[in-house]
Length: 156
Length: 70
Image 1 (cartoon, each protein chain N blue to C red):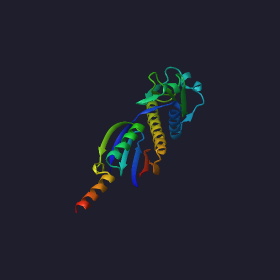
Image 2: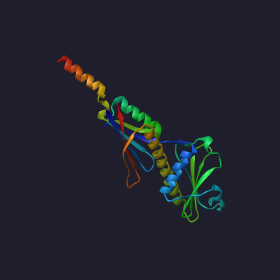
Image 3: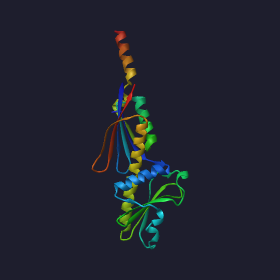
């Protein structure tokens, strides 16, 4: 009883918060984080290699926090995901890899975008709940990956 | 002491459903507004019957008024 709201996520943050969500999503999907973007495989691949780009909707990396050209690179089973800031400041995920179809790469990139968004929203929500001194009653992750958080707040 | 419960469901694509329980009227709206600022944009919102119930202080005053008139 009370109210029920459905909210669409907006991902606007400085690089550390985005990087934390990207890392959490990478761990969740079994992707390894590369040390440096300079090691990127996709840069060395011929132009015919399929590559797809997916943007995180309503996203922005705050400009001061990540200079152009800087990016995170993740890998798994020959697939490489590059996470970077596009010209408009949004978060861009570029997927590439030999032996994978464009559809496969697109599916991986889309899944990663969703997972990153979920991780970012989870981190931000829990941080804000703690700062407002909410009491954590229960937290669970269902089989389909949905996160359920139950908190309580006492009003005097 | 009044206790307000909030159930937050974050779907695999990041969409969030917030269910505020035990808070009425203005208090309920304050939680909704705050969580909207935290997460993003409102896609849909429904008020449940509890939202329209008078807040605790108002209800106590009403009960006292009725007793005084008796």
